[in-house]
Length: 436
Image 1 (cartoon, one colour):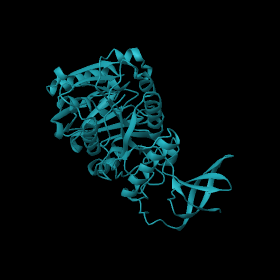
Image 2 (cartoon, helix red, strand yellow; image 1 turned 180 degrees about the horizontal axis):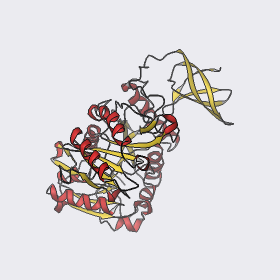
Image 3 (cartoon, one colour; image 1 turned 90 degrees about the horizontal axis):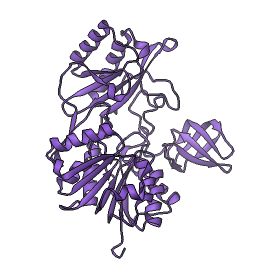
Image 4 (cartoon, one colour; image 1 turned 90 degrees about the vertical axis):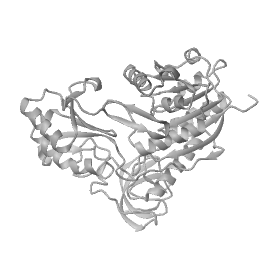
């Protein structure tokens, strides 16, 4: 079997080596290690491989905590020390900014850290009946596979939820439509935990009794979702505490539905908002746009600082939720929310928002290239804070903001939103030169 010296980590957390002019991406290997590996997929310019044996281990290697690690696709970096994970993600961000955008930030912000385990307050578990593999499986997908891991624990979930997984599997296996229930979505708020069961067929009365008993025994709410996300409704109890999370630093409470998008990591979300407010520095009297605003996660803290916020989001349902959250928090007079497709933003559509002093952008993985290109002579905010969940699209958009729109990349850094995974969340600040 071939042996390689691992030089770095790629954006998926794989070790990278060079062999005979080819890049070799080795699952389970860390920088500085010498490993024996087996090639799983060969291409003319690269190979994908797995570690067979570690000949020289990195000092940053740690034993994986989860028994499913290596099979489960939920985590890819449990074998790397948590502090080293953040450093590796910072390098991935800097490499993307340089290699894709040809940019280097003036300042590298300290990484935003939080709990390394038990942090995941949202999860979508697959459910599949596989008689040939022992029956019902409930868990995340296997690594690079459509198969479901038979998860008996998950240390990135809160301990009470992790301990519940075997009982959840047993309960689902007893349902009459166990083979027509493809997923369970878990949403955890400050005062409630909701399990949403995606049911392709109606639950029988016996099923409803089992689900209600499970909800009572586990202290959770059970919802059913027969169609799209908006079809989700309570099954038991019919009334209970609303899902919500708080942002104590800004005296804000955010209500949400279990199928709404919210950040997985509540701890990092609070710190990321704090960092965003420090960089954006909202002032009373300013008009600030929050693009891809969702429920108002950043909008309401900005408004609490005294600025007027114009929030734009593609989902009508989320805009309605943002409006409601603004009213509940006494911030309706400082906020305006609109539904619009920001992937089709133009100079005219951005100008229609009115004069903007500053801008916050928090797009999905696809980035905000249309928004970056749409910033024109009529709409040139002095400061832009860009929150990203994909370093590649951040780097691409940053190049447009700097080279075409005249901004300066003042700083960038990562927030370790998903410890034990290769996911890189980051934040960047762009400013217009004083003379511009």
